[in-house]
Image 1 (cartoon, helix red, strand yellow):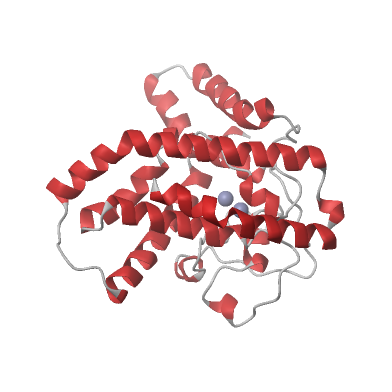
Image 2 (tube, protein in one colour):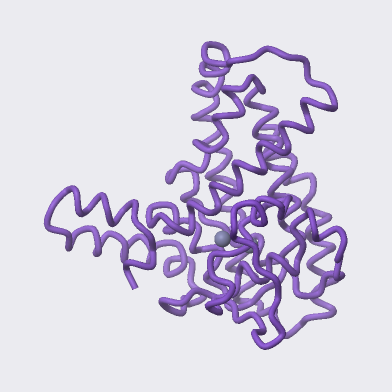
Length: 271
Ligand SMILES: [Zn+2]
Ligand SMILES: [Zn+2]
């Protein structure tokens, strides 16, 4: 699939960025964690490719039978697609922090106590199962081809690789509109003042519009990782423990209604 090739084609750029960062910030890298994050990236890409192969026929059916508009692809319609996809990403990301079903996949990205470019690669292979792709369907229904939509998703994720560093430039003016390392480092922090803030992908304006924007506070240097437990540097622990803990909570519930409420409820209610 074209979308997976975009990230593959950019991988030398990611590798150079990691090498340059490693020279500056050796302390935030360990071989064990780097190997774990790289394995998570590869397994995530494989799951993504497999899910696209399985889902593309359904996307095409929706495009052919359900698309609301027909229009040509030019600079304006392409720009609109990028902005709409980033808007949808904001809501996917925000939902991932407020719904246990989605959080069980997204927590993998947040379970490192370090913040560097390799954290960007730390992704769960369960995203296709929890239904991340559902969030891109509005673009297909608007009349964008599934291939174009998935390519835009890949480019959005490629941009986000570069906000995972503590050693980026300040980017003050740029950061008024776009997501920057400064904004995203706070998103990974578990200090009370930064929790559930800065969900933006490429644009930070969504956080400003919808009340989830945070700026760095001098007295609160970001502390990375999740609040409920410290995850071991093990593929099984990082990928499966969140599902085991969620399954236990669901199992404890007396009724189906209560079980569903836990599945769709906020992670905060489990702590
Ligand atoms: Zn997040
Ligand atoms: Zn991140």
